[in-house]
Length: 119
Length: 226
Image (tube, rainbow over all chains, first blue to last red):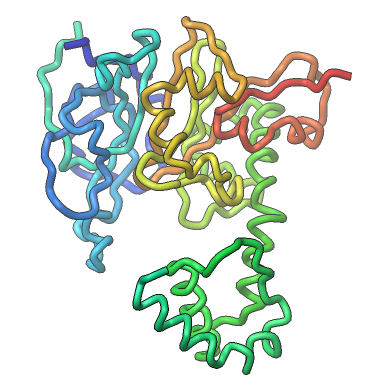
């Protein structure tokens, strides 16, 4: 499997969006997206489930869209991250250079920690 | 169309349509598309009529909102980026907190939270929403048809360089292409590289080359040849 650790910038600025108290992951952490297929309205695209990436930034805590979609109040809020993936890892036959990336927003409950292999 | 609920509603609506439509709404839409309205169009019209009957909104308010989408919102993004091109500190603030920086210019993004991403000689950014068509409407107006097409949404994530080439944008191998899938609560705006030959230009001049497509990242701004 292609190495799944694209570079991310050190956090240059604190997030000024919704505060995210108690966030489980930090910028630079390697994570995997849960490979699970629950029914319902999910914001985690199928193509990224099971893939590995790196936390790019913490966006803050947001009402849970998986609950909002069905008329609930979205509480408790969930921490939203931006995760960066290497295209070569997401699409094994990706026709482009190793360093191309795709970034997207993933809620904390879709993330699983990975061992830190950074030097 | 053979959808029974559609036929039922169409008949009901047709029966009394002329009693009030044109008398009350002097801005009644001109139909340009052939064929019967879609179920979603019927649903949206039914909702608007109900809200009007209950005196919660007027047809003119709806029209004004639509006009604003076309007349004002599409030009906000260019203004914001033109400011960023001419004011380094503003650009820094825009990158730190897009919503707050826009508010400085009197632009209220309402519910939208904005992440501005900057193109550099080493990185080119392009925006998509694979799940639906999330788009920075408060800065760019309504998304273009191609942005909403399944062709763009499905292809730009796994062959961005091929898609960009179709837009006339060819990038060297050593440039990192970053696709941003706008799949949840953030909205995105690309800050393109300011082209050479624009020294001394006013923000207004600069905003003219900052077209919608450059701010989505499918193309790059250039100085028109004289």
